[in-house]
Length: 429
Ligand code: DOR
Ligand code: ZN
Ligand code: ZN
Picture 1 (cartoon, rainbow, N blue to C red):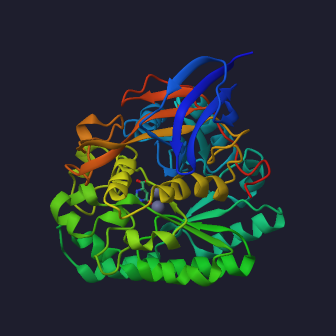
Picture 2 (picture 1 turned 60 degrees about the vertical axis):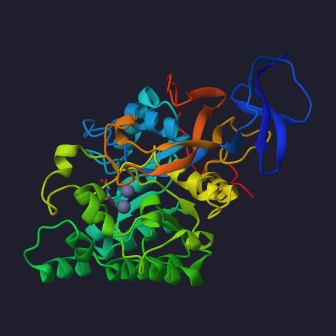
Picture 3 (picture 1 turned 135 degrees about the vertical axis):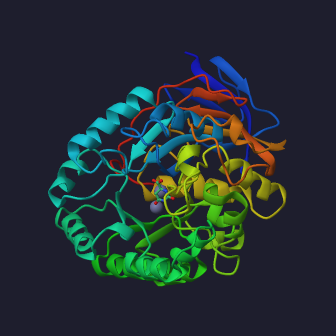
């Protein structure tokens, strides 16, 4: 019997192989040949495991005018992502069993790539019900919650014997409040980085470390933006993982002067001295885009009214491959931080690795393709980026989800994404 698909001449960091795919799974990795219904020759390209973005905001339900599961997942496919994990701050938030289930249905109807979901948290009595549906994590915004309530969540998960991680947005709201008050009347976007200073993150990460260590419970820290906060994590590596975004890695607060509110995000961009840079990548677990789309009219409001967030799905891989082409980063770092790392941390048992038995998810990249980033071309509904005009070298040319091509040479023909329950099977070694 021929297999469904045979991918020929797949160059990886470990050599060049042919890959047999049947029924959406990798059935054979070989130097030989196989009988197949369909063949794709990938000579000249580099093949990565399908990339996973563990941090996107698709705004569905409730704010579909900014982005919905269809437009967001098309942006993901275009950017080379075969799986995304969506954040719960939709309207209403995905913090009850019924809203969580509703979002699974929305994604299964609209998504062109596979997806997992982070759960929100407000009512401790909802935690047990949500756990049955395989949330990637429970997400907490430390800038808008009482510490006592966070403590209750840790206790609840301990009492339920659940190892599902708690994902934290770390900024301390008291520090933010007093920093904003001290600023007085200012209107330029640059002031935003002063209103939410590095100390707000450092204090909040220290609190997160205390909670993780006290409860010996896994904590994942989103979008770390300061080098000092990274130092707080070091002694607690067994309990804490962390993430960086492309903007915190490569842009500094000067971009708020150049791009105004288009560069406004939480936590804000930092100065070159306090922020993170590619040299810090060995100490960071994953890269998440924090794809956070808004409309241009919203971004044109005053600095204090405009919503924070940057759409990154169609930017990040091009920017990272450019670093690879400049010799500032290895391609294996992309594999570790955008595939293996997210799969391990969020318990995506069938994803993240090119191995027999795994889902046939692949991101095919052309390391020589050059161009200039332009938000006009985004599949995302949010047509802006502080990376506008960035000259890149290296881009995704094909995205494959369970054996189905969902992006081919920049075009997204469609696809039927599946919901992936997290932490359900045996985790990766
Ligand atoms: O910049 C941000 N935008 N930071 C967040 O934490 C939320 C996000 C959003 O949902 O827009
Ligand atoms: Zn956040
Ligand atoms: Zn976010």
